[in-house]
Image (cartoon, rainbow, N blue to C red; front, side):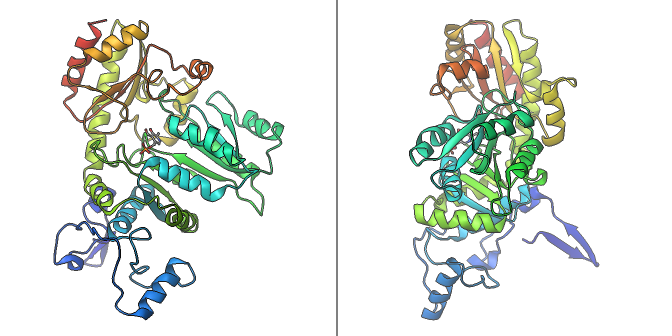
Amino acid sequence: MDKELISNGKIKKLQPETLMTGYGYKPEWSEGAVKCPIFQTSTFVFENAKDGKEFFEMAHGVREPGKHGAGLIYSRINNPDLEILEDRLTIWDNAEACAVFDSGMAAISTTVLEFFKPGDVLLSSEPIYGGTEHLFEVVLAKFGIQTINFGVQHTKQQIIEMVERAGAADKLRMIFFETPANPTNCLIDIEMCVDIAKHFSTKEHKVLTALDNTFLGPVYQHPIKHGVDLVLYSATKYIGGHSDVVAGACLGPKELINRIKSLRVALGSMASPLTGWLLMRSLETLKMRMSTSVQSAQEIAEWLSTHPKIEKVLYLGLLNEGDPQYAIYKKQCLSPGAMISFIIKGDEQASFRFLDSLKMVKLAVSLGGTESLAEHPAAMTHSAVEPHKRKEFGITDNLLRLSVGVEAAEDIIWDLDQALSQI
Ligand SMILES: Cc1ncc(COP(=O)(O)O)c(C=O)c1O
């Protein structure tokens, strides 16, 4: 399937959800199979030795890819399931290129490692996914890479001063941020981060911006349109969407993605052919799944906000017009998403009682699957965050996180209601 169709001299540009059913694949490549098969092979036979030599030259970047792309060599380097999936993923974010990985953390770690050396500095938003925080604070620190943190409460000027005060102005290589932030749904202004990166960029060194778009993307937030260089995903979440595969992706300009792919070959952090195939299958229903979950999430958040046992609901669809977060929301988000956090009137014991009383919603971490999942961030996903930081971010003992799935909203509400009645 091509991106555009032509009839009677008129061009029809196809929508992303249409392209997810077949873009980048031609049935004649595989005996007429309507769907791309799983190319479950470790290596590919060359027609002749000259081809083999040229394919390696393409892989090393010393020869331009031919009209059918770079030749297939070995599944750590390339594989049709990964290449077709990568082409499809570029559609939503309008990116030049994509690299897929065997986990969101593999995508983040491979991307970050490619652009840093000892002595460099990373500027990172907080709160951020715990695994990413561990990578930055513990793993990168071992290699002499320092991380400076900023939060939603900081202005552009304060962040610039923070970097300057730390003597990091000429060492800053990347701004990494997550918005909406997990688990509070706080928003970081994308435009502000792009401006800060420009402020510290020089002719020799462009400071890169990298955004973890897992919560709203790829359907409801398009960071590249707002000037971001690299967009990252835990494809385990909405892209995979069925809680049955762990994967990741990074999208951006060809030049940067080619560098990341070279390191991916060296580290072996690519996704498997089966993962590529599963994600292609998932992409066909991505928009339907996400839009159903969003519709239910709005209904559930509104219902929760009127419940007598709920103190506060943290959901983008409930932001008030006067709130500075609302202005950021209108600028960069296309929907409030399907992640709801809420504070109950009670303590950890009451929170656990609520979770243990759920009958249909599953008590599990992760998000973005067809089934609704509930968890306790302070004791689970964010338990490794230092207690004083948890307090600062509002990750309290009575905060709960809900990933709304595609079940009937009335069933989810019934389950939440009966579990709330137990506390
Ligand atoms: C926002 C975010 N980024 C990255 C990750 C890491 O992804 P993975 O578990 O696929 O490695 C997660 C996992 O929960 C996440 O929530």
